[in-house]
Amino acid sequence: MILGIETSCDESSTALLEVKRGRVAALEHIVASQAIHAKYGGVVPEVAAREHSSTLPPILAALADRACGSPDGRKLARKVDIIAATRGPGLVTSLKVGLDTALALSVAWRKPLYGINHIEGHIYANWLPGGEFERSWSRDAGIFPALVLVVSGGHTELLLMAGHGRFRLLGATRDDAAGEAFDKTAKLMGLGYPGGPALSKLAERGNPSSFDFPKPMINDRHFEFSFAGLKTAVLYFLRDNRHRMTEGDFMADVAASVERSIVDVLTAKCARAAASFRVKTVMLAGGVAANSKLRENLAASLKAAAPKARLVLPPKEYCTDNAAMIAAAGWFNARKRRPDDLRRLQADPGWELGRKKP
Ligand code: KG4
Ligand code: ZN
Picture 1 (cartoon, rainbow, N blue to C red):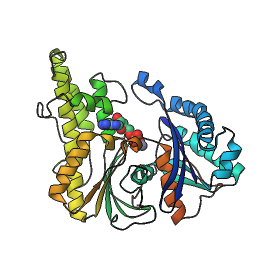
Picture 2: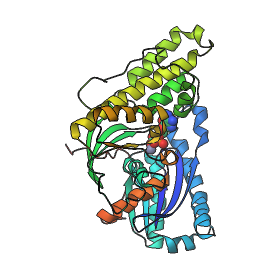
Picture 3: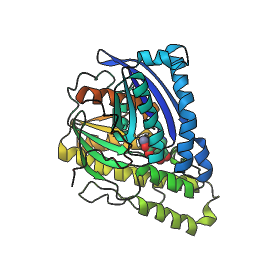
Picture 4: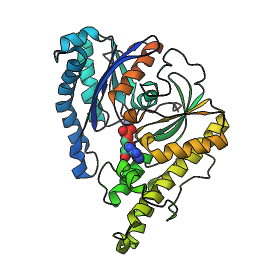
């Protein structure tokens, strides 16, 4: 039974996950999203940390209530075998709230603690209920080597996964992440924050071939990305076409064209990597994995470029930040390594999965 805690950005989340006989036997999870950042148009770190410290205790109590029928932590303490909390990457002040709470609980309850990589958490969303690997907790046949396309608000990268906990970074974004590209263009279009889901909704009514926005690095052989230029292109395009913004489907066409640029780059690079490394599976991970166009286009491209690779999509419910995925990663960490040393464990805001030490 794993208690999961996630506070790396602007979602406070707790989860209790029970794994038995190679599958999830029980799962409770609570996510409290911080709506306050919408009025600033982005996450304000100091505000996020304060929100976490006021939200985490009540959502721990609510988790105890759901799982044990009482908000009293003593019953929860008896159930929990290990604690898993996000250690990085993320905003350091946000990470500290969750990790310090987990450290205190670990000392008070005398339970082993695992500091978890947030991106590894996103990957293990594929093992949660509704996911392709929900019955594969003790069976790895047919999964590895896997290629993971991580697409979140803070990260865009391609990782080669040789086995549980074994990652090699093939390439990452040099500037903005895919989620950031969605959020920043959505903001320019007046769609609020976070704008990814809103932009994608608006795009449904638009024609993706209306405008040619840049598709940065789409034909380069390396596996790096760059989305900052796209945002600038949209900024100038909207400035030059301000008079058309109230025209019929103009904004929907812009949204659909922007979405196509982002999705085409992600899809092309991912399909090329899947073919070059001859992987058995291609997994999506992170908030942008919820995007329907990305899911559809990737399926089509993989069929052509790497027909033997199986495409694995995380359940939509677990794509964005949550503690259930952190608890899942905790379970796999506990199978492979010792718990963290409580005297040394610290938040690591820049922790990169799979990057070779220089
Ligand atoms: O993984 P996540 O919850 O947070 C980070 O770890 O960064 O990802 C959040 C990102 C935001 O940028 C949000 O706009 C984007 O995921 N996102 C989407 C969709 N749902 C969430 N982007 C495009 N289409 C979606 N349906
Ligand atoms: Zn995330």
